[in-house]
Length: 252
Picture 1 (cartoon, helix red, strand yellow):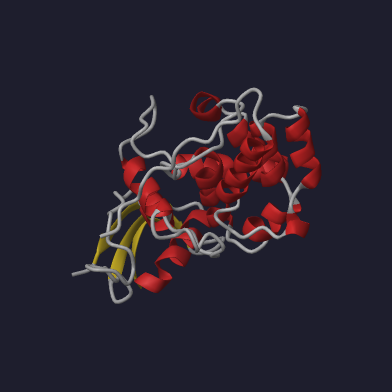
Picture 2 (cartoon, helix red, strand yellow):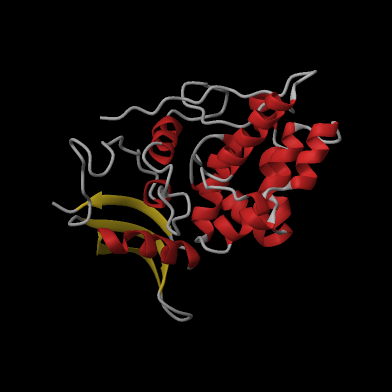
């Protein structure tokens, strides 16, 4: 089984050489753009010059990349809302979202304040400042614990980081089922490797409260049985109609 190795911190220090600066710029592009290849004509040359001149910090450069049309086209315009927010956590805070409350808070920020405010909410957060400050490039965090972060976050971050380096452009959220159902995230071998686990043939039972079946019909509780391929979409539909997921269990 492949192991996820936490990335070393990359920091822009005083009196950095041009080589040092380029190493920081490459690290920011790699982290914020999820290992996507950046062509020369896609580079943010103005923001790079501002960083070189000391007009912005590394955090400012991270903000510029995350608010760029390139980031928007890669991860916002082509992804589901949950996947977009999931990737914002990964790219900007180096971890996975902890629970549905975090996801909902960021959905609210985007819906009421817009795209730039959603990006700013990560970089301006106390968590970002404490973890990376102004001059450290964000990176994956696993065993770096901090107050208020639940233990389940380790498994979710592990699952989000390992094995998905080339799949950040995917449309579907990786953790929506676990987070939506408040389930522990299992650590499994990467797909195609030794001991790989497939869920495609499994079925799941979802128990829900306050289920709406239209403007005139609302039930206090209900259960749905769905295949793995329909699980993510059914969870999204339940949440859109105001339902609360009580449990998700695998059907024997």
